[in-house]
Length: 160
Image 1: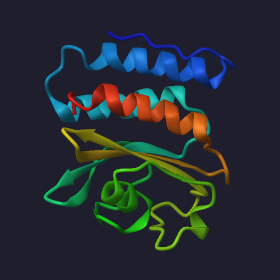
Image 2 (image 1 turned 180 degrees about the vertical axis):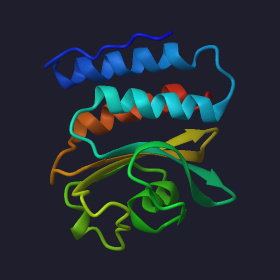
Image 3 (image 1 turned 180 degrees about the horizontal axis):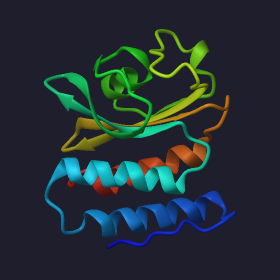
Image 4 (image 1 turned 90 degrees about the vertical axis):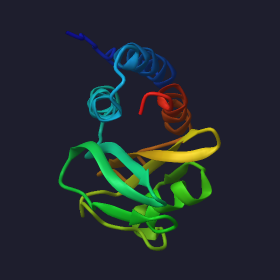
């Protein structure tokens, strides 16, 4: 059994350092990528406050397909280049969107979402998945959040 407890009121740098350490431990001995993504989505949900959705989309033959997540039911398939997730997958770059309603082509899976952070997970130079975080607060995510989730993406790339 795993016992992870995010520190109360910790600075973001400490929170993300602890999140990455917990993620390393969580996926260390598990070869199944779906099990790992499910546990990682739950871990992000525990550590990152003020979310209404956290999870993965997987690259399946050049299209993003819904993976394990926590939140309301979501869009199942997203073409590369479409919406925030598709932009991250197509460019291989983190998408930090303060106001999703101002993002051209935003896909509204949950009308309550106001801001979004999408980080590509890459292996051998190829996007294999994206980590998608949504918040009901406009401007919820900043560069420190992006850096923290990018660190998570780097250490789990071989486990999902």
